[in-house]
Length: 245
Ligand code: BJW
Ligand code: ZN
Image (cartoon, rainbow, N blue to C red; front, side, top):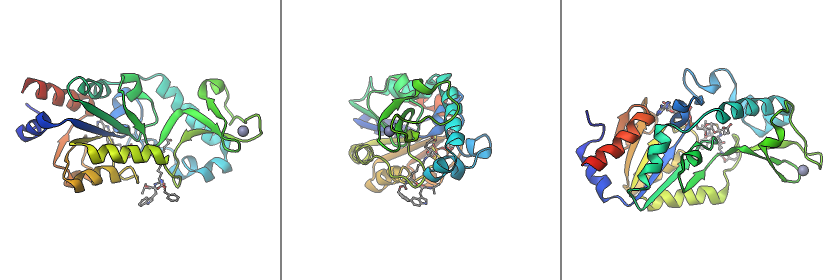
């Protein structure tokens, strides 16, 4: 049975600028846990104890260890059919932009050309005092939080709760959505702001919006279409149905 409605395919045929807004659900089929939900990371870990600057300052080793644990999972994972299908959209549309909340590099590994990482990148680090940047490779075997030559603590280059997103990355993401004529939201619970504003900008502008998720989210009722299912199944099917239409 087709996953896309005839209306969706007709609109996709006229689309030139497609934006994918992705969250952790898109990497779930690669074996990377999501944050919320029954199997999510927050089931066993408290976000306020791990994903904030205060938590880091209070217990840098614990936060560092959690990031090393997640890096290990990510380094042993590969992009899935969903990431690859997004890359394949580039063969058929003039502009395909990925705006992701994920820090896992899997869109890049799949070959997507234009990616905005709203919440940073787990493989990058910097010193909180002098801002010197460090690749994670330097610390693979270290369990405790490393220190910079200047004595400052080194933290992962990700965006924690209460921290601002990188201005230029967020503006570029906003512009991409503003200029899009088709927006596909997949694998996010859409509850974390300001990332959750991006689909709302598209909705308000009357840009055609499709959500692909295994369950409905806060924003599902506002989307033009909601397709229930795994991104690794639905995104490739959507492209196939478009090409066969
Ligand atoms: C599948 C699937 C499959 C599963 N196929 N689908 C009210 C208004 C505005 C802001 C706030 C507010 N109240 C509080 C705030 C602030 C806060 C916020 O939004 N909190 C909310 C929880 C309410 N936001 C912030 O603090 C942000 N900064 C900010 O606002 O700055 C201004 C400010 C400055 C000073 C003081 C106060 C404000 C920063 C947010 C940073 C979020 N950081 C994290 C950690 C990043 C680093 C790391 O990875 O460790 O980002 S938290 C975590 O959540 C991570 C994710 O990117 C983010 C979103 O999660 P995501 O991707 O949506 O995952 P899940 O698990 O929630 O959902 C998975 C979905 O996938 C589900 O729907 C599944 O069904 C689906 N799924 N398998 C398709 N196969
Ligand atoms: Zn330093």
